[in-house]
Length: 79
Image 1: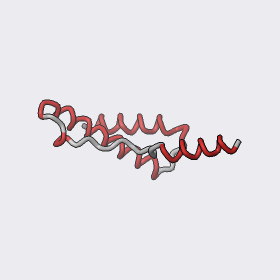
Image 2: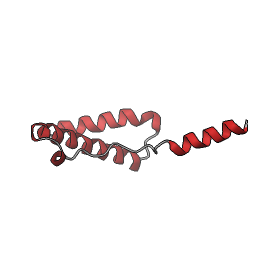
Image 3: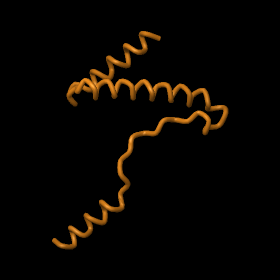
Image 4: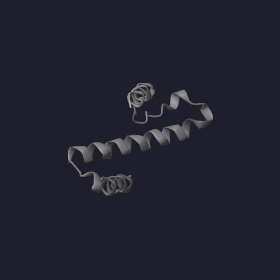
């Protein structure tokens, strides 16, 4: 039992903490992929804005996907 606890503690210590996906930097990609990187960055920013709105409005986890989809559709319709 003691060995299992030690192994579990080592496994937890070795694993990297989960982090959110970093924003794409179009300046750090090859020139031929820059346009795609700019589009991806814009999409990531829209997703983060909607996620922030969901957090501020305290949307329940079960309703979050619907809320985010609606928010992204609303932003797309405005453009």
